[in-house]
Image 1: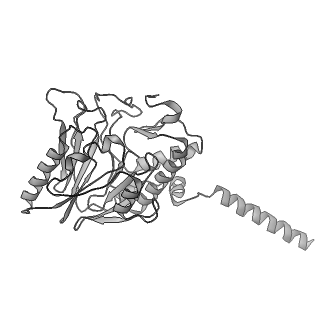
Image 2: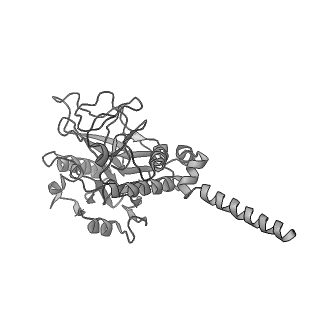
Image 3: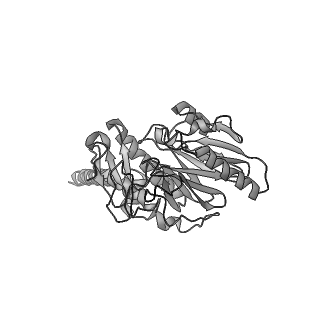
Length: 332
């Protein structure tokens, strides 16, 4: 009788352990979801060394007679955000120019070869040099990923003053430049001179996609993986890769204070659940570019809940958009 009770007890213990293991979150990101943790609250515990501001609005196709082809906004003295006009290209991507003491880094060159990207960047660089009593700086041209709407201006920078490097568009060139040894798992860094930037491999939207974390501003530059718009996943095999990149971003943001998540497009209205259809050239009452870091948790939660059966789904501040299921122009 005692032996039987012992065996029953062992069996029940194993059942309980199995049940716990099956129900337990599978990763640190899943534990955060289960606990309802706020990445924004975590980030608020540490202020950035170089805070900045965003404009009240961006050029958004409202005045094509007077809008500049490229809007330049100084987030602070050492980080500039550029937006191509929607009157010139409906993609209207954002470009990012970061300055360290020794190097400057331009992320993306835009979606139109004829747009004055180099001219604009060169003007910002020269103004920055004058302000900082410097005569020269090494300018690196890199990309959030290699889709055409982010690389069309590359040729403008070839052989130009200050430009030391234009990173290639294929995956070996990307991983070699950033210093990945196990893409996308490892996290190399680049130092621009008292400005260290963490580099995360975040494929899923494109095989070469990277996300940058600027330690001085606490901005997380997520390219086209997460932004207020259509988060395109192009093929079934990309879906688990997309989910995994989201998971790693959630875990990174739980360990590093993220002030804002900043992507490369805006395709949402200011009101929740109000996307503009892809290709729309005029965005009245447009959403802000910057997103609170909890967007990473929310998108990951939604994508994880879909499992291996993705859906086209409108969220409050973005759209999970597997294009192979509903086409590029699906908008709900």
